[in-house]
Amino acid sequence: MLQAILIGLVAVFMVLDSRLLGRLNFERPLITCTLVGIIMGDLKTGLLVGAQMEMITLGMMSIGASGVDMNIGSITGCALVISSGASIETALTIAVPMTLLDQLLTTVADVIRIQLCHTCDNYVEKSQYAKARRVHILYGPIVYSVFKFIPVFLAVYFGNDLITAIVNAVPDYIMNGVSLGANLISFFGFAMLLSTMVNAKNCIYFFLGFAIAAYSGLGLTAIAVISIIVAIVLYQLKFGDGDKLQTAGPYDDYDELEDDLD
Image 1 (cartoon, rainbow, N blue to C red):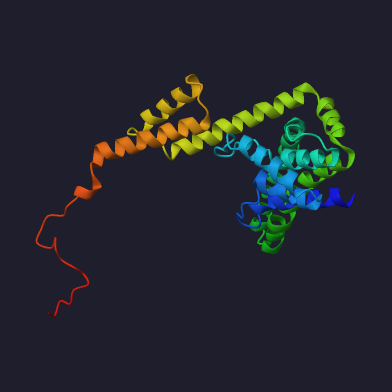
Image 2: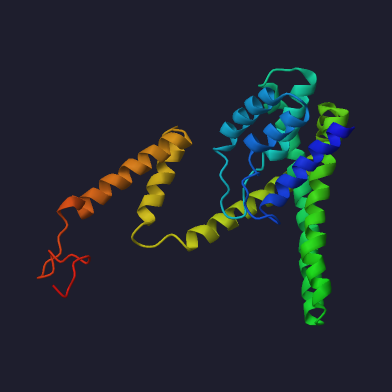
């Protein structure tokens, strides 16, 4: 019971990292799984599971408001692997249904938080700023915390079978609706991001990157390396050798440290 509560608090601390505490970089599987390992007395397994899950999440970069959060699944998978003595690879099989459940609960929490935004607006219109501040600083984080703590606590306390049973009990039309909504948010977030980045000069590079990612079969790391090489080549072609840059004029040999009075 105590371990389940503490691991649930790790999930709460993780979700509040970027939302209330600033960005302390605790919202990473490597960090959260390490904390789980410390709580359960098996730091080595916590580090190994965290490293494994961190490698998986490297390819799940958020774009705009979209993204798949594997942190809750990683925390649960790490805890159950340590408690059951299963292999590290088992963490992924546990993390997948937990991540699906977390996505569903996050969607419900987002609906509640949107209503809280309207509540804040109403208080501000009535000049009730103390109530608006309370909703923003207190009620919002509580919603985040509750929807992260409860599934992690239940999964660690009762085991992965409970999470799998809950996911299987959710009707398909609800899961399809959540997936559709997540995709719409992804497209909207991607469009918002591109609207600030794309122009007539660089749009061809976005199409090139999309074509490489879609048809080459290369992974994220390989595409990133190719992109860096292309950027360096284009820089050298445009600017040439930086050592040969010169400034014409009579002040070429001027030294700012020299005493002008001499």
